[in-house]
Length: 257
Ligand code: DAK
Image (cartoon, rainbow, N blue to C red; front, top):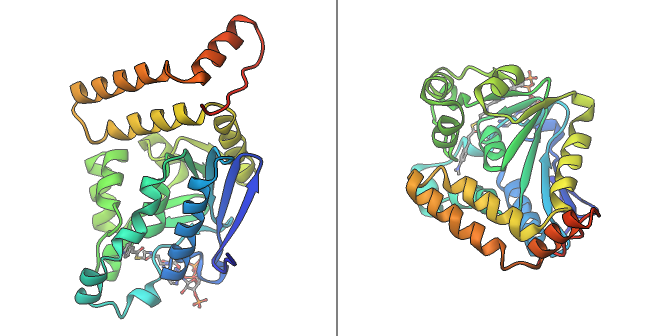
C-alpha cells in the first residue's frame, strides 16, 4: 500500500510506524487512522515481526484528532458510523508496541500513545487531554487509560482544565516508562523493541495479555489468569531453548514456537 499520512519501515524484526502529517503536527484524520490500521494488520500478520514502535516527529507525536475534520461532525454521524471502533485498533494489537513520544501528544494523540504497551518520552514531550477547551471530551479512552495510568486526581485535573503535563511529571506520575534525550528517542525505542523481538514472541504476547488484564480483573482472577499462562509457557519450545541455553552458558535462540 502507498501510505500518504504515515511512513512504515521494517528494521530486522521490528516494525516502525511514523505518523507523518508535519504541517498539521500529525493531527489524526480518518485517512491517517485507516492507514495506521492497515499497517497494524500487516505487522500483526507478519510472522517475522516481533515488536512495534510508533512515533511522530520531533515537534509532535500527534496534536490530537484533526479538529478541521471533526468540526462538521454531527451526533448522528458519530453514533451511526461508530468512528471510535477504528481508533481502537491499536489497543488490541497483539504484539508488543512501544510509543516513542517527542513534542505534543494531545487529545487523540495522547490516547493513541496510551494504547501502546508503554511510552518512552523525549525530554520535550508534552501530554494532555485538552478536548474540554474545544467543547468536547476525550473520546478514545482518555478518561479511562489516563486515570489508570496517573490516578484520579491528575486525570481529573488534566481533563477538566486541559493542562499539559511535561515529560518529567509524566514519568513521575507513571504515564511514561522512561525519559530519553530527544535526539536518541527513536534509537532507544528501536533498541528496546529489538530486545523484545529477540525473545519469544508467544511469551511476550502472554506477558502483554496478563499485564493488560491487570487493568480489568480482580487480583484473584488476575493471578489465576497469570498462573494459567505461566503453565502454558512450559508447552513452548522456547521454554526448553531458554532454559537449555542458560544451563549451557550460551545465548538463547528463540524460534517463536
Ligand atoms: N487538528 C488540526 N490541525 C491542527 C491540530 C489539530 N488537532 N493541531 C495543530 N494543527 C495545525 C494548526 O492548525 C496549524 O495549521 P496551519 O494554521 O499552519 O494551517 C499547524 O498545525 C501548526 O499548529 P500551531 O500553529 O497551532 O502550532 P503551535 O506550535 O503554535 O501550537 C499546539 C501547537 C499543539 C499547542 C496547538 O496547535 C494546539 O493547541 N493544537 C490543538 C490541540 C488539541 O486541542 N488537541 C485535541 C484535539 S480533539 C474520536 C476519537 C478521539 C478524538 C476525537 C474523536 N472519535 C473516535 C470520533 C480526539 C479528539 C481530539 O484529539
